[in-house]
Length: 288
Image (tube, rainbow, N blue to C red; front, top):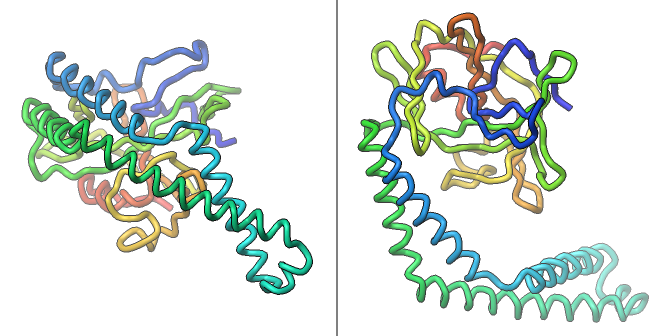
């Protein structure tokens, strides 16, 4: 388990030391602008409707589990074929081979049924139009917040944590595969400030209070991927990220932009693949 310096308060994170149900996010003192409640509610309602549409387009959970297990078993048998040869496999384990073939056929059937249902439901529910409206609402919110069109889109790291023996320990429930989340935000600079924008608010940090970018040489993972390009290819290939069979993206290192505000040190946590943008906007170089 990773332990962090308790003297630093992680921004956009939640302290659950005393209350595991706490939902107060650190950093409200840096908020300089907030979007109207009406616009936020409209956006969230449309997003929820789209999520329901996407869920409706999927196969029932039981069939998705069967499809996954069939695919996994088929690949296992296929790997055995490659290792010992088809003739040897048929001779020594014909039932296993036939079971693998049947699982492969069932996977193919469920795959095409799944794709057919997805295409049909998304068309009937007009998912493309829903997506366009959500995007327009998102742009309207950022227009209200006066976010420049050329603001960079970056990921920052969020997590819940508990303070143990004077140290901060990222916390995850038994249902989570990782303690960390990567939230996509907009970031830009003005003459004297660095600004980070989530869906609702603009957080502004005086450049004079930005002190250092610290390197944390630890391998962590996030459960989703927000970029269009595959994390293992193209411009991301140099970071040597990996993806496991449930979609978690692993990387090393990550970084902390430290901010001294009043008598408190705050930290903005971000993945390795966002370092160049933060260095450019802050004028700081990561300390190794």
